[in-house]
Length: 240
Image 1: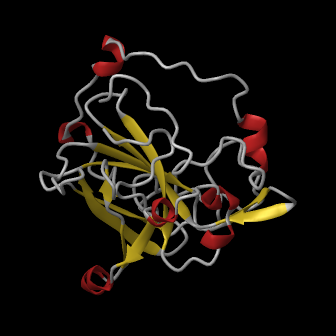
Image 2: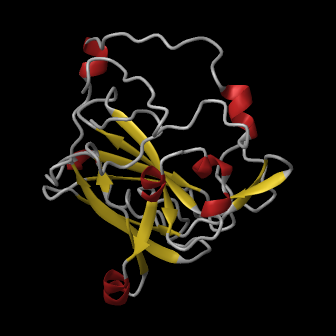
């Protein structure tokens, strides 16, 4: 982990108060950031291992279901490889995801979307990467949803990803979008990222070979932690 937080790169990261994304103007900090060295509490923490992962933690279609009732929506596979800039796989990393249900509704009290909550879907899951950096989730394809921005605009289908390193202080956050979704190019949140390559790193690809083998649509989303081909992360330019 880097010794201190890295400064924002304006060529890659969006400006904090992006006019087309209305909420960013209200949320953007007014004072300059303070950069400080990491302490022991940030550098140390619990060691993640497969013994702490439940059997259904990576299956969002079953880990919250009542009496094995499947949630509403299109069942899909999301998988990929977590690696560094030299294509070396990252073993034992904790990956967590959260998402809206098929109607575009989060299981959260502050979600004001009028779409229904699915009683058999929490929208949360976690997985530990294998020795080859592999992770996999079975889930429901999330729906797009409206949000107030310059009137009403729509967020594309997406899944939030959190990648932990060796402690809670080593955490990277990003979002995965779905190849072919026409709402991607219309989303002010995505368009606030000035670098086209960084935007493309957030889009998963439809893998028909896996789809045909498992009879579920499969989307491949590789996560690269560092280097020129790294995945774009919301909270830090560089990787773990």
